[in-house]
Picture 1 (cartoon, rainbow, N blue to C red):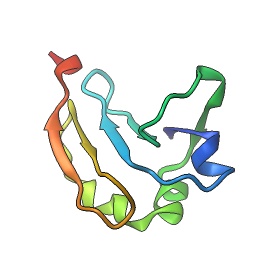
Picture 2 (picture 1 turned 180 degrees about the vertical axis):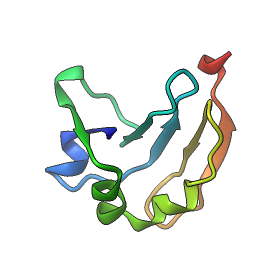
Picture 3 (picture 1 turned 90 degrees about the horizontal axis):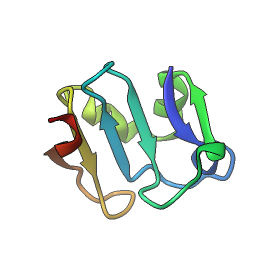
Picture 4 (picture 1 turned 30 degrees about the vertical axis):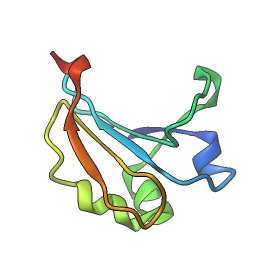
Length: 85
């Protein structure tokens, strides 16, 4: 299971920010904008890939890193997540 938002799954917003959490290895697929915890949904990774196949480019993203992009079609930029320590 992965964490995402209803805006992505139900409203078709783009995935512009991806976290690969260091503490538990989970994935977060986000819009890059603000959202509330009430917007959070759990979905299978295959549902995320179906929504946006370009996230497959991030399969090798290390634990404790994130990737972001400006818009769909822009390249992913990878960085170490300072929250990971």
